[in-house]
Image (cartoon, rainbow, N blue to C red):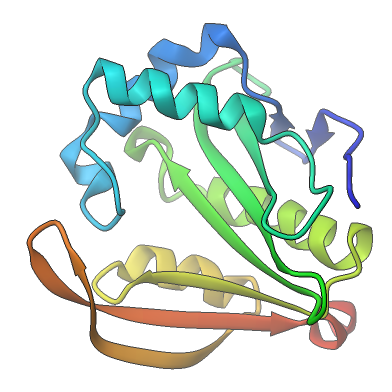
Amino acid sequence: MLVPDLPLRTDRLDLRLFTAGDFDALHDYQSRPDVTRYLYFGPNDEVASREALARKRRRTALRAEGDVLNLALVRRDSGALIGDVMLTWTSAAHRQGEIGYVLHPDHAGRGYATEATRVMLGLGFDGLGLHRIVGRLDARNTASARVLERLGMRREAHLRENEWVKGEWTDELVYALLARHWRER
C-alpha cells in the first residue's frame, strides 16, 4: 500500500492531488488534438474533461492491485498546472506497475515529464516495493519514447498493429525498468 505524503517536490515542480479548481488547465491540454493524438481518449469536450478530472481526483493512493495514483504537475515558479503523471499498480503478486504522463505542449522540451516521471518511478520502486515498471506508448510518439529512455527504461517490445485506436490500427512500444536497475542508477 502507498499513500504518498504530498505534495512531492522536485527542483522545479510540485506533484500534488488534483482539485476542482484544476478544470480549466486540465481541459486546456486534454482538449488539444496535438496532445491526445497518441492517447486512448480525446480530444476532450468539456463534459469529458470534467469526467476526467473527477476520475483523477479519486486516484489518490495505491491501496490495492489495480489502483491508480494520478498527480497534477505544477510549476513551482508560476503555479501553473502543466500536465499530469500516473502510477498504476498492475500486479501485487508479480510486483508490477505502469507509469504514464501527459504534458501541455507549451511546457514540452524542458525535461518536466522526465523530472516528474522519475518521482513516480521512485514511488513505485522505493515506496511500493515494485519489481518492474513499464511504460506503454504509441510507436509514433517519439518524444514520449525519449522520456522513457532518459529514465533508463529499456525497450522490450514493439507490438505491430496490436490495438485499434481512433479508427486505425496502431503499433505499441513497451518499455520497462527493473528495481535493481533503478537502484544502480
